Image (cartoon, rainbow, N blue to C red):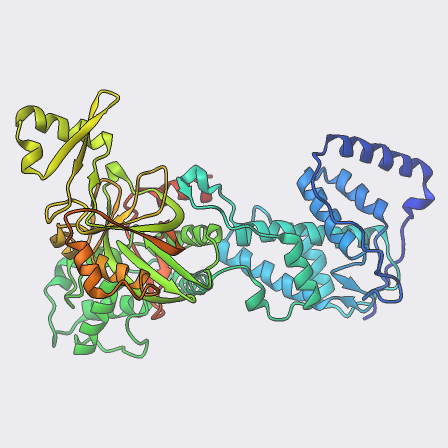
Length: 544
């Protein structure tokens, strides 16, 4: 079928309409803040243009006025069409462009996985459905066609914001990592230039977003089966290898759903493979891998499917905010995971357990650059701890400071300035890693090594204690040949501080992710230890 679209009216043929447009445009221009704009590319001519379908610049301005676009959105729209001398981007004389088909599928996929219909334009979607499903030829440009073209472009910009930058304001949720910047015009230029090819490489998201989004789709299929039965915790806890029964079958199906057991295992017998699957499941939730289905694991496995899907949606939103993985070095601290990861060239090269702040003294979510390593550090005790803990102890025991290897070195705002000297009892251990910030948070060693054996490790005053601080120091100083293992050992056991400045500062991101897919392809879930998930849920899933 051939569809012929004819012009309904011409703006240039209506002086009165032209006057209205120009007057309104003048008012808009007066209210707009001066912003850098892209000049019209007049090197594109009818001879070298990719399409003969063109938008009259006045029709663009009329659309901006009619839709009451904000200044920034209007400028973005102008910049895109100026850069292509007002050629159509989504439609050609032969019909719908290939990049339009690709975007159409992307848009539908986002709607189905995010379940966010607030930005969905059903009228626009219906028009696209018709164009995509029919063999269409376009012989003339009509106002209706121009409107469709501009609506598609504006919808693309909204899509990019929601899908790749996120809908919620991170700062409102105590997330102080700079939000990933998205250049929507450049993205659309690229999509059009490539005609939608290589979409996997085109999307401005990191691998964690892609794998978690893929897992979310799989969980929607689990949800379609209905609510899964609650596992009988008392009955499961008594199971051992060789046992059989319905409860084994139920637990097996649950482990299949979580990806820990192959779907083909339909027997009701508790085997050695089943024990290995339980260890995998324990790893997914951050528990010790005992291989025994204890109460904590079973409670996690009994969490409703809908709650897990919401958890994934919350974390996909966080990943949208997050900067893309750099090509160089990166230290990523994930608070709910109680783990630090070191990446180089986008691959993990080191990881270790950590201790984070208690609920009353939360570790802050932010980023900065690690610039200094301090061996055998003093611990300059924060005023809040001096006021709440040190000062009362000093009043009770005049020898308290000496007994704790501490010293007073002055006064400030009516409080003694207290620090703990280098040594085995120093609360910072033998090394600390500094990345300047107003929160007084850093990475450091600790003498309290036993805490790393705990599954839940929120014990600090806000700073981050490391299980393997020497390994991190050795890695960071690998480009300094003079810093041998022996020299690092000596510096860590000195009686005075030893400062080392990094040749190249290393980015540090302290983040909060409670769901992700690990390098082995398994979905991971962690507890919302600071209540950040709950606050995000209130914004992402408001009560109707």
